[in-house]
Image (cartoon, rainbow, N blue to C red; front, side, top):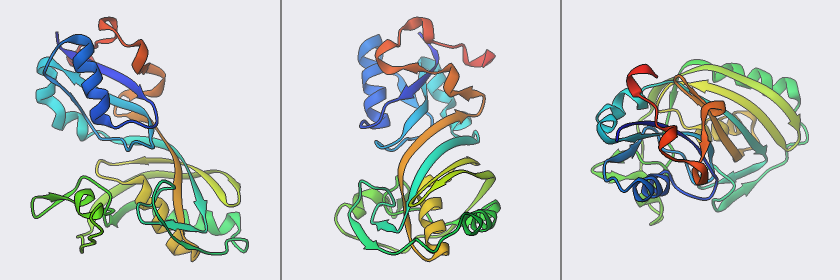
Length: 221
């Protein structure tokens, strides 16, 4: 048994949980995923089965698309609503045109400092492991590419947007950096990954419905 399964990951579980359930359902050990989604996040999670696990780097390298919601005026330690609130600030003065102009600053080739709550390793330790202990360390900025960053709707404090970006881009950090640029702070309340390379949300299957018929031959994908 080998191939690719495009899962529509539900909120509230980790990407590792998805892999564990697939492994148990198919009674196969060689199962992995290509690109972690936070427990808060939903949407496209590419699961690799059998020999396809050897190609994880190829799949991880695909560009990805997201539809997300952030709220202005709230800053948290994890850059999402599930974290500890660090600060509240006023946002009533922010106009839609201000947000659109700020989005332009985060489009194209930019530098992004990965959040502490991430799987990036520094000195052999994952950042989120340090963050859970209350340890914050300096992180090096990394080059990413934001192909598209489009405002979809504004109902303050809520801002909905579409993001298409390169690997290694953290949506939570994009939101936090935009909030900082606007001067009011921001954090993510919802993330849906809609596409990973050639795999779209329309092609995905809910975890509880998955069976062997959903295995794709990776060579033809």
